[in-house]
Amino acid sequence: MTTQLAKKLAIALFMALMAGGLIACDDQGPAEEAGESIDESAEEAGESMEELGEDMEEAAEN
Image 1 (cartoon, helix red, strand yellow):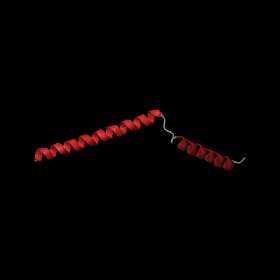
Image 2 (cartoon, rainbow, N blue to C red):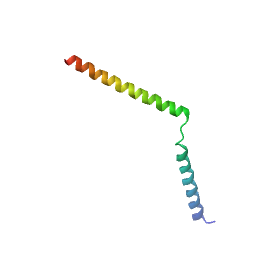
Image 3 (cartoon, rainbow, N blue to C red):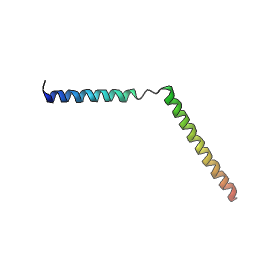
């Protein structure tokens, strides 16, 4: 086996492993799903607080 062929095979193997790793990242475990749920809840709470602040500012102007 020549060095050039060995390099090409090593690169092909590396690319296959990387593609497999990317595919495996799509599966979310329960901890990741819980984390996303917490993030969404925190974002919604922040938006609600922002709206409340705007409403209070409007009320103060009137």
